[in-house]
Structures are given as structure tokens and as C-alpha cells.
Image 1 (cartoon, rainbow, N blue to C red):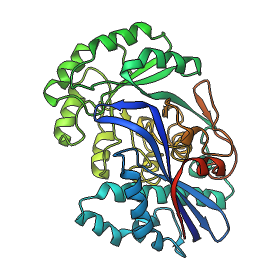
Image 2 (image 1 turned 90 degrees about the horizontal axis):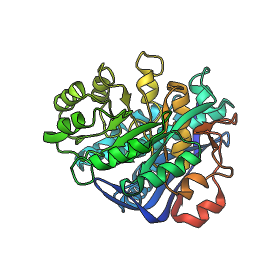
Image 3 (image 1 turned 90 degrees about the vertical axis):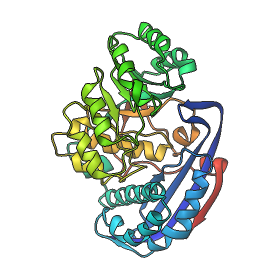
Length: 374
């Protein structure tokens, strides 16, 4: 059991010169909402609240955490990280009433992840080994966040950094980027993997037509080709008919739906995001099942969520690939007192307890928008 003594939340932001371009719009900055939870053993757990967009989302969730969530943490006992869902059950009604369950889910996810970090630190064990003693000490990655307008140049830079798998954003105008896809696969080396992320950008009417047109290319997966608001039946129909592998999961916020998709024989890549829904407690449910090799965690944020995801991936699916944003982001690369090591496309996990890193005071100070301590 652990008891919470102190809680901090940091709102950080790094302005971008080169915007991240997706089908739903531009990301003009990289925000981060980080929580730091200290127990009475003076161990500190870290978690990240998903806050990439819209632009004011991080500030809004900062206030939600400060005004609604934080009081229930102080002096609370946890026998298990999943206790967070029991503790905040009454608060959930507020978010149901306000039609804002997404904010609730991302805040609860961060708290759950921070509590897992605390439990591992209290056992003096790295998080991945705490989850699964047989966890690997490294995890393969792929370079993501690659804009279509500079894809070849970015792939080349990522290749020089040791990556051999790349995910490119397409579907910006609801059409098939056929010329771009052809260009990318001419540039691809034999040992490399190419993923295409449509970000829900294709019209359902044309999605299967597009998928059939590009079936000749060895695409590792096509991510979220249509709206996540499509019915389960409609999405599964596309999955079952597609000549290419489809990947999805970052925008599923219902465990029954997630279960339905992961058990589908035609879906080989399912992508939960521990900063958006369910925290760490959700994906590890599949750790000892026959579906574990389908889990490829989604993540696009700061170093806290990134290294936490690496630990979870190594515990669930050590043969998988973890998403690694290739855009410049000091909130990922400099957020800790020592850098996360990515060598030859692999994250090396250290043997320090918990997620294995401490926040850098210099980086916090440089990019801090606001903080709250209680």
C-alpha cells in the first residue's frame, strides 16, 4: 500500500517553427501536462496527461486537475494502481454531464500511470520488470510524425539516426496521395518498414477503393483510414475487406469496443495510448493473452509518456514497435536529467526503479507556462 503525500502538475509548452501537419489541422506547438505524485516513502511517480490539441486543451486540463482531481489524491491510500478508478468514480459523473469524458479519461490515465511508477519504485524495481519479470531491456521503435510535404527528406534523416521503420501522415485533403506513396516506396530500402497514417482523413465511401489501389505496395500498416466515430460494424467491414493491414486504437475509449477489435482475426495492429485512455492498467490486461503481439502502443507527447510507454511495450509485446515522434521536441528529449537512449532504432531501458528517470529542473523552468503544488 502507498499513501499520497504531495502532488504537482506542470504545464509546459515548446513553440514550433515547423508545424506538425495532420488531416485535422496544424500543431503549432508541443504542449505537455506532467503530474508528479510523491508518497510518504518519499518516492515520486510521474504521469502525462494527453494534451496535444486543441491549442487550449492543456490549459483547460491543467485547471480540471487542479480544481477537481487533486484533492482526492492527497492522503489517499492505494492498494493497487487500478484503485484510481474507484476513487474517482463519483467525479466521472461531472464529465458525463458535461459531455467531456475525454478529459476525464486522459487525466485518470496519467494518475494511473504515475501510481504504477510509484508502486515499482517502492519495490525498487524497473517498471517493465515490475509488470513482467520476463520483460526485455529494449524495444524497437519507428519514426513518426513525418509530414507528407517533406517525407523523403525526413525519412532520410531518420534513417541516418538508425531508424528502419517510418510512419508518414497522408490523407490531408481526403484524397489518395498516390504520387507521394509511389515516391516513398521507390525511396524505401529492402529492410525498411513503411506505415501510412491517414488520421481519419478518408471518406468512408472511398476508403476501400483507395486501399485496393495501393495494395501493390508492401505497406506495413494503414492507420485510422476513416473516422473513429464510424460504427463498429462499419469499421470491421473495412478491416475485413482491406487488402492492406489496418491499424487503429488510439481513439477507442470503450473497453468492449477495444476487445472486439483486438480479437478480430484480420486486425494485427491495435494501438492503445496510455496517456489518453486507461493508463497502464488497461493494456496490461492483454499481457498474458494470445493477443499481446497485436499491441503496438501509440504515443506522441513528452518524454514522460514516451518512456512509460516503452516500459509497457517491453512488458507486453517485446517484439513490437513503439511510436517515436521524429519532430524536434525538447519536452521529449530534454525533459529528464539524462537523455533517453535510442540507438539503432531501439530504446534502451535502464535498471533504475520505476520509469528510471527524473525530471530536469532546467527544462521545466525554460518551458514552464504554469504549475500547481499541493
